[in-house]
Image (tube, rainbow, N blue to C red; front, side):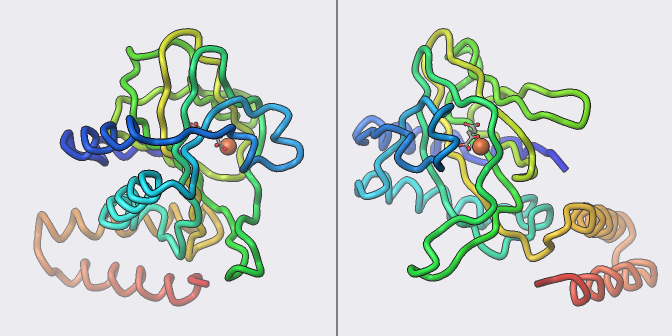
Length: 225
Ligand SMILES: O=C(O)CCC(=O)C(=O)O
Ligand SMILES: [Fe+2]
């Protein structure tokens, strides 16, 4: 399931993030790329060690964790990694798939990447090119969301960022391991949960609401890992 979280950040939060970006140190994006993605990755990232980067990543992490749509649609067990990336003119990220396992096993274990996400920090009119293109079975779709919105997509896809032709593209990208590994099951739970909440909003705590709540809880018991 590919979906958008509109206005994940408030206007004030984006402003604060942009102020932090202005003081940040940039490094070559190849530093965090795998051996084959190094060949196609042309971007810059905030150095993970820098205090500004750590404050910014901490801020975005807590915003994601508070977001109800992210919680019900992704059901994160862990949000593994957040990177702040910059694409200037000529920069892009060629076709690739994200690493299935991330993190250092010696430093606290591997995290499976089930879900990838991009939080847009630049407005679409601030740059030309730079679309995030996600391949389907027999087609592909390009995404360029307004600043403050997040695109969430399966980490299993082949995808790319087309070269930026004008301006600057700033994003925060990240990966989550879900409690529900199978994306079809995750989607089914999301739909049931959405229907249950809508039923509650319209009619309160009816017998039907109780039954669907029981199904959601019991499917979680069956599938969560
Ligand atoms: O910048 C983006 O929207 C996605 C970048 C990407 O695919 C990655 O960092 O693995
Ligand atoms: Fe990627």
